Image (tube, rainbow, N blue to C red; front, side, top):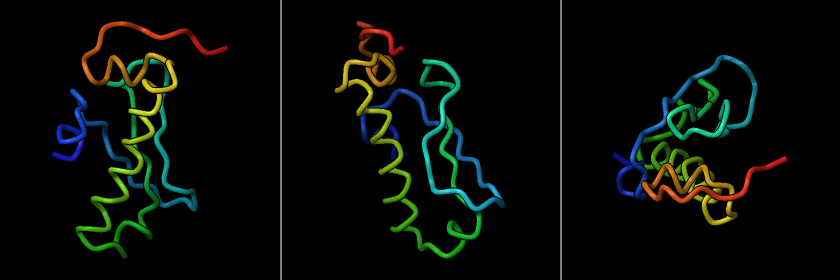
Length: 88
């Protein structure tokens, strides 16, 4: 599992959308369990396994970046229970 290899405790749900949107990490609130990776279906079907893994790893890295930035989200995702400052 890519998320576990990256040190995340939970794997976000991957949503394939028929819309024309860029791949993204989407979150409702500050809990990593609420994270979703949104990927357009037409892109996903064109990628091979290695490319899909790279795309997912890139989006999951945004969750880890939240910890580095002190936002708290990625910290809890990795198991560090020390929250960062809230974003306004």
